[in-house]
Length: 302
Image (tube, rainbow, N blue to C red; front, side, top):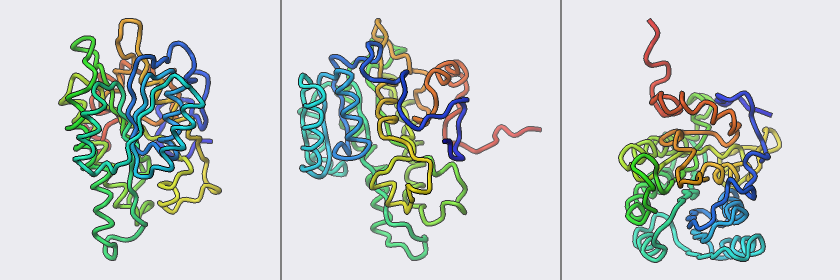
């Protein structure tokens, strides 16, 4: 079932499907190092499992809680015993910790920025400013910080026009609605708007990498419930959908090129059908404003 959210494809998915099944040869992540923040639970945990199914060589799991990271590690080991796993307990806001991880991990191919913060819903006039600003520390500042620290060790591109490494940020589809509908969620949604625009700049300023914002769908996670959402009343999506979508986006062709280069600098929804999306590649890549944050309706019709 499709909620009232943007969809340029005719088909909307709520669960994983054949085209993005991570065990197929065309989606293999063999030889690649995958870094995932927020890897202990929810979408981050499932993303680790999907990349393990796709034969990733090395999974780097980052999160704040050792017990949940250890659980993810055990699940990954059971999924693919040949995948190397590194676990780091740290906050993405801790610059020294992130620098240490970047130095120890070295070259990487995929960076999934899954850590997020959503303060309790509340109106601006009465909200706790420190809790409110925490969303910006995690959703915006940490993205800048991690980009600065990890870019120097990104896998080199096979050519000038084909990035070697790819960065994903987990987007929020809620900002597609007006402020009246999403009132009391400004801390989370405005910080996510800033994050999405930030990904556009990372893509524009760093031709050696690709950067994409992916809305994972409506998945029953702590962040989702923290927004006050009731899964029983909404058309929910599985975590597998977003995780497998990321594997599909990260695939390489035989010559090392990235088929999903047309999504660089864009925001996409994991719900959109990938085959239909790929059929729109020329339009997506040629229209700089399409699937980006901007002023709706501009250029205006005469």
